[in-house]
Length: 280
Length: 293
Image 1: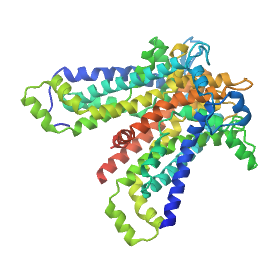
Image 2: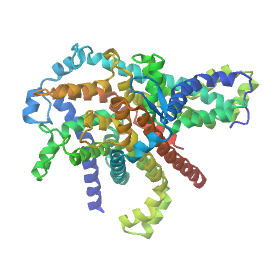
Image 3: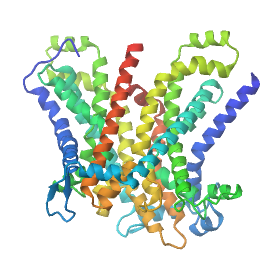
Image 4: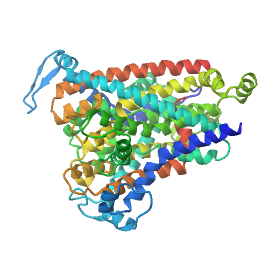
């Protein structure tokens, strides 16, 4: 019995190292100088250039691209993440409210129209989506970056499931007390959904923050670059340079993964709950 | 649906309007456009287009290049799915078995869950870098002259490695919560009947986990087909020449780099059909699971 326990721990430690070590190495290496990394390889111990490297990456005008700073890209990533999460929650709560709490003729049709969007990920319809966006003149704008990503049903389904689990008596009681649809929504349903809203906000923020393909297509103007777009850029600068700026590339990667990693670690239980219960 | 509902002639439509507007403009319109332009040969300089029937589809499906990419996509998907599921399951079973340090392991194992595919790709590139990559040195030590970005096989290996690394935490979360939802009485009964832990796992625990595993199978196939775009894009850096790519990447390359709108749209429609089949499978399965529980 005792031997198996040790083996269990060994497997878990190996697994944890396998998953987390690359992230640790990325951070440690980013605190060394490029030339040192070039001659000695990746690092496992901290170097003395943390402040310099990150200051350069965040503030230097034209750090990688000639026009944009890391701080600007980070701000754009936050705008995309928060804008996407808020938009998703507002749209999907309203739609789910209509579908669950109202009796109207086209309810089933509306449900299926929304539902179908789950069938096609953005990746398979990028080309025509891009054409539609350029037709609408939305390239290089925050609207163009955020709104098209909202065209999916995930949030609506989370809220639909949640509203269906809200006890019927609440609506009966509210109606006896004379509450109309607006009052019921704002004074009863929204406060009840607080935890749900928070969980969805976190999941959607990470989803928006991590978007890669769409920002890559939608932004040619560097003022709108997100961190993910910056990663693509840094690799293009890479080709042909003598000693690539390994440290700055790693620093950018660390900045790009910091919010998602922190969120997952801090809000672990919410995250797991939101994820694993969504498929039911 | 609720027993008690509001009835109002206008309000439900008002609440649905924003969501429907976004979906119609940014989902249905582009999808219809994709299907439409897959039947046309479009002039790359924008001078009109001619109807060509199924020519674009035939052109795509008969090209040896497309077929070899399709074959690679199948191998890539199968390998990534298998390894990320197997390792996720292994870690979940072990994490479920230990008591001491349980929470710490769990936190460590899921901490990299939300790292974006391109970031994973960038870190992977460094680990497989010709000058500084430790994996290349290990491979050299074993007599393997690894050249990621130049050799087809080595690039494929690195891509699969990174894609698996990124997906393990996801599978771990679902398998662990699946394991923890199993009734203790079943496990105790099994422990009395059978001494061998391995046999107990395959005959009792694994069949009970099968619904979770099947759900994850579909999710992982979707992940390997579509979400790995970032990994691939970072690792082949637009130079698809001699490098392995997947079908989704090919849609992007033909549409945006090659300006072959008709061909790219036809490929999109082919992928739509693949996703459609996957989704139907998934929903049929979910219905069955509801029936069981």
